[in-house]
Length: 291
Image 1 (cartoon, rainbow, N blue to C red):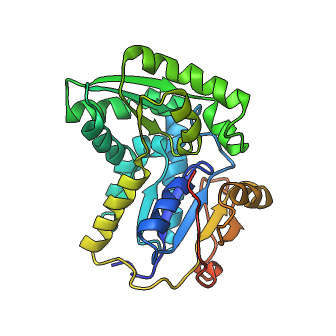
Image 2 (tube, helix red, strand yellow):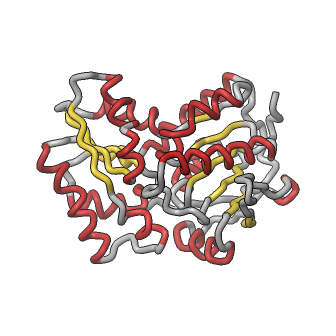
């Protein structure tokens, strides 16, 4: 049994998974988070699925070794390629992805049974969303669009520039032409672009899987009696990239965030070693504005 005061491990290729962390701070304020941004390999979207799977397994094993009591793959392509394997490796702890929760919300939202998915190239190649949606309802029409420009734009902080708007128009056009009424944001980076997406296509319902994922996380923690009664640690954000650049990025997206930031490196054998839990420090408030 894991320690109730242990952190929740969350990871993504970059900043996107912080949209899930924001929901954890809202709905599970007592829970400390150990977040890994694998910026040494961002973006994951264009990489071979086998390679992404190895990254996801390496990070999950590092989070388990660091004592985390639950793991959230706040990364769609990792959820598509590695979720089942990590669950089999660690049956004693909750391991969640973001695909299933987002699918269930979209199926409830759609009125005409036409659902669009905006995702990375790798997630589209995996067909994870198509399979999950049609498993819920074989009559659903699913239209997937790969959005290779979105993650680099978000990582660069370009949330509402002419280039961003142009890319959004390009990616939304086939969904609008197909007559979808509900669109899943199939990458955790994409909620940062939601204001632009809603401005271009206000008739569409956009589904951010983050909240539904955290609701399932809360249920899993309560079921296993792993929920923290009191917040005792600050959040720790770890990047495999440049920690100074990561600090500037997090300050841009979450100017009121107060957390510890550290770095980690991959070894030549694919092992990721994370900082000791003593690096977490004392509890700090995390005030995240809406975006």
